[in-house]
Length: 137
Image (cartoon, helix red, strand yellow):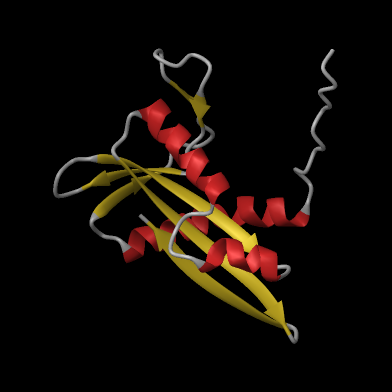
């Protein structure tokens, strides 16, 4: 045994529940903001690729670029800012590293051509909720 421990179940954490419930609405608003794509969601999905039997992907949505027919991935993230380190993760123009690795993995599994990641970043200050929406291409 190498000391592997079972990960803690976070499925009942408020931020996980919020993200799960918000996803369909964020996807619908993305579709309104980006009429150049056909945005589809196929429910709980587990995509596999025979070339990489060890890998799988569960997509938040699939995109078809209407002008070219190119296929892409829609990925949705919700995040609440709790401190300056967490804020720094989302401040730049690039996808945070952990999500970048995730979408690269999904591109490998699906063999699609592009990813659109929409992040809804939430902060609470003086009991006021502030939302920032960022699209990463």
